[in-house]
Structures are given as C-alpha cells and as structure tokens.
Length: 138
Image (tube, rainbow, N blue to C red; front, top):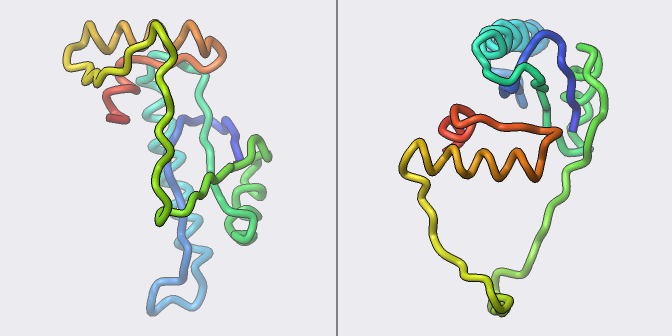
C-alpha cells in the first residue's frame, strides 16, 4: 500500500487502461489525480479528525500505477494480504468461546454508532474514527 498526506484525506484514484481514442493515458491520470487531490482537501477541511491519509492499494504487478503514486510523493506504507480458501470445501465451524455471544448489531441509531466509535477508538487510538466516517462506510 502506498500512503501519503499531501494536503488531503482518503479518496480513490486509478486509471487501469487507456480509454479508446487516447494515445496516452498520462494526461487523464494527471487530471484524475488533480481532481482527487482537490476533493481530498475539501474533505479534510470538513473532517472532524485532521490526521488523515490518502492510500493507494495496488498489487505488486501494477508497477505503472505504483510508479505514478511514488512520483507524486507517496511512500510505501503497508502490504496487502489476501486470504484464499477453496470454496468447494465446507466452512469449518468454530466454537464460540464460553462467555461470549455472537449477535447481529445493525447500529441503527447515532447513539449506537457513537458507542461503537468510542470502543473502536479505545482499541485503535492511533487511527481514530468518527460517526461520520462510519456512516460513510456503511
């Protein structure tokens, strides 16, 4: 994963293939990056948490995309890990430890979402989240 904080907050940007009718996708990629950064600044200016990052997730084979992000000042941050399993095999049932109960929790109210955020931020203080961020992701 490539991460950086050049004036912005999390957005998505990529151009995997050259659109028909274009000899070179570089100008389009640059325009997309410029617009993404403008939007990132706008999001960051309105965010309740200012410690934000922009991340690009690319497979190691996507060297052109990685080189583009690196050329914009992004740095290698974390790796991407994939878990695979044979979907033709049955899923192994795991026993729930004694004293725990698994329930579906929809977090339907703002108060429930705030409870979740409070617990999340206690566990992950280095990457705090907000109710607004949670609502955006769900």
